[in-house]
Image (cartoon, rainbow over all chains, first blue to last red; front, side):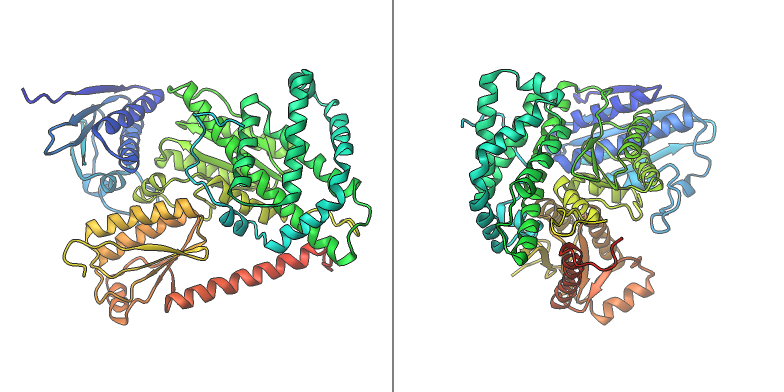
Length: 134
Length: 308
Length: 141
């Protein structure tokens, strides 16, 4: 048994975003991230949870602390059954320097974390997975 | 005085020399205060009775000071406060004492508003009521300025400590989402402050904005400091709320500065690509206070000519 | 002295400024450490400005520049001005060609220049303050 545990937070309303953020802080701290690391993770979770509410009505955030001593960190997935991202390439384009609307905020989330991937298709929902290592 | 074990650890514990630099206090300023102090400290008994004549008229009096023993010890502390002030030996021990004052106020639940009203009165007593021309014409201005600067330094320490204690109390009382609303506090003339703790969602942001705008309208303040050192996360939604709030206050003629930006929060704001525009943001409440004092040009009335 | 991926950009306090000098290659690790060290220093010191001297660098690519630029923005959000000084003509030409985002970046020829500039600003601010405070202001009211 790999011993990796999963913790899910259902995102149905705005108060759930707060719960997800607090859980993110809790798990990051227990894995051993410092203040800056915990803040990055919690902020990324906040962005992703809000995206779920904004674009998909409901979904969930799944926390998977990675406790293997040689590779400690955290993996988090944000899942929804919404309409999917129509133009993924555009959503991932870094419009940082022009500084206009931030849309889904995915480039920002990517910058906050170490690993980042998105699976999506129109009508098939979206799954964003992020990872940060100690 | 025994120091309790759970004292707040000030993360930005500025030392005396740094604070004096921030408030542009030079040794000559302190010397002037000392000189003035020698001429005016003799009125201490008058001060105590005048101060308490005023205090008796306030609602706080019956609530906090009805007990004669308590009153005695508070009066002792107060006398010592002013002796220390006019001694102006601004070293780390002095700073520590001012922080203790802030904690004492927070612990008994006295509002910052009451504290500031009391300070205003005290200042008027020491520099106007008990002033009878002791100083030469060209010493008067600089001495009053020096007193003002030291007052600002003192009160900023009290405010900072008070604010941190309140934030800490709030966080400790409830780890869940904050439903509690924190009142907007009026500091020195023209300056408002509001510490925000926890998670800011859209409803809370609306409440915060409404409370701030109402207080600005009521007090006609020119600066409001929004302290976010207790805020867990600033994502794009929260940043938008904050920026909207600063736009709203500006439309009422009041500048909003945001204090308490930790290194962690600064990093996430920039990585998310959030553009704060021309909103003033600072690392600590202390920095915002210094900026607010500068902006409002808070200065003692010139006893010779007055203004306006 | 500093070799390979080691090295650290030291930041030290001078008057109410923070000053650092880049003597090592800006690898991701070095840049991240610098960011953390600098932001902690800014938070603890209430410094008025951060002055970073890049005159020790021959080369800076876009990735390194953007990392540095982001660090500066973080310090600015904490209420401090940031100066990047001593960029060589070669680096400057390369950054401009690569369309680096240099908007709002404060620069000076050297650390000394930056300090002089900041002193001069503070002096004129103090003068303005003193004249309104002394009660001799003619244009009040």
